[in-house]
Amino acid sequence: MKIILVAVNAKYIHTCLAVHSLHAALGGAAHAEVREYTVNQPEELILSELFGAKPDMVAFSCYIWNIEMIASLAGSLKKVLPSVKIVMGGPEVSYGDAPAVADIVVSGEGEKAFCEMATGRSHRPVEAPPFPYADLSEFANRILYYESSRGCANECAYCLSPAEGRGVRFFPIEKVKEDLLRFLAANVRQVKFIDRTFNSSKRRAMEIWRHLIGNDNGATNFHFEIAGDLLDDEVFELLGQARAGLFQFEIGVQSTNTETLTAIRRRTDTEKLLQNVRKLKSLGNIHLHLDLIAGLPHEGYERFVRSFNDVMAVRPHKLQLGFLKLIKGTALRRDAEKYGMKFKDRAPYEILENKYISFEHINRLKKAENMVDIFYNSSGFGKSVGYLMQQAEMPYAFFDELAAFWEANGFHMLSHKKSALYGALYAFSRKSRQDRLICELLKFDMLSRENVRSFPPWIEEYYTYSHKDVTRTTALHSFDYDIDTFEAKQLKVLFNYSSSPTYEVFGR
Image 1 (cartoon, rainbow, N blue to C red):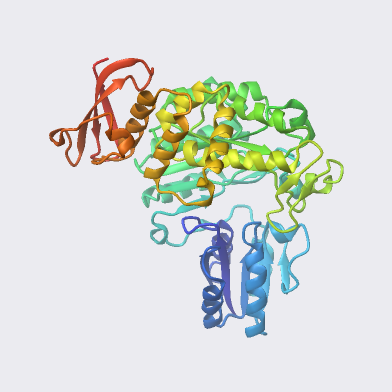
Image 2 (spheres, one colour; image 1 turned 90 degrees about the vertical axis):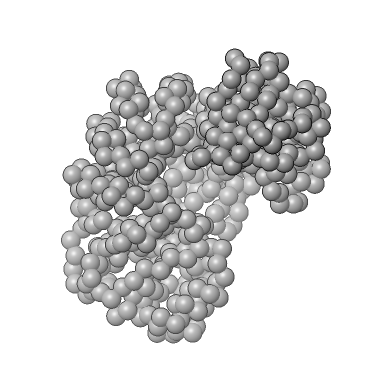
């Protein structure tokens, strides 16, 4: 029997751990292959490829971002290959109605059930899945996903983990260490652990971090989802030894409202979490990505704005302002009527409004979120946006005002090159702030990103440049303001572009 395991990823850079894990679990016991596509590719292209392969069975990994496309694709495939068996697995079909075209639905962990179905032989439950990636050289510059445990110690009402009801199952630590050495030996770009709360066991987390620090190849980045309030001085001491760029942490705050956290059954010491984020940031070697969710119970617009300002006060490297998704199988979906939840009928089932926050305010938050993504989460606006946030009443007020300006000027209807974004931010800043200072900060931000040879007119009017100060790999520029303190002070800054941009300040 010829089997094709199909992943439809959100982006090309992503990989799908599920299909690779199932392929590895088969271990050659069946004629199977993995094919990965993206939601951005034409459905007709994927259909043509699958039809041309003439499979006996096609197994799809189903999530909220791909279920609509997979349902349509599988329906078409069944029409042109009537004998093909359509198998669906994954969270989007495990806790609700699967598309009618599915012949078989695999719910929950798939290795045992799928292998028995594919081979006709019984298989033992998986204690520790085999290493999922057959040839790491095939994944150059892509993100590889990995798990060192399954399950979760928490019972968050918006998440599917409680529906699995098994707690946490840790895989053997020595196997995990061996697997990580394989990633390091291959110099892969990034490995993302999908463990729900990686540091739920402090000792185990420290052992893995210590292993990675000791075997660092100088290139690979490891991403972990952690609970920020579980960190302590012993952990900070260890993490301080890591190479800058070795680790990246995602920390789910979701809300700083105690009533909201209680309603969603999330046990978090928010004050300690934010304090620990400050400590992590002071180490200077770990990229920090913090998450908030709008649309949760007991959190109206004004209260969510306070959560936003609480989190932005610690200045994470990235702030993900997400919107509640009422996923099948979650407690919040079951309790949707209790909280007056109105959400989209189709995946990803995103919140429209509830009894605490209106659609108007959700829409307003979405506009601010767009500004956060463009001007805060993307690189290139660090000094200018930092200053403008500081000048605003609160951080959220800056993004809210910028969103209103963006829409009033029709910028939301267009796509923009990064060079044009600097001009838009300058135009916004001219309302009530010092033209020359904001020019200095925007000039610095542009130079921090690339070796600019020709500046836009709104910068050029203030300066004259000598090309003798600019080479292919270095550039010496004068500034009339201190780019960190915003004081009027003449400085020179030498930018070095020989690798990633760095700079050195003279005149302080």
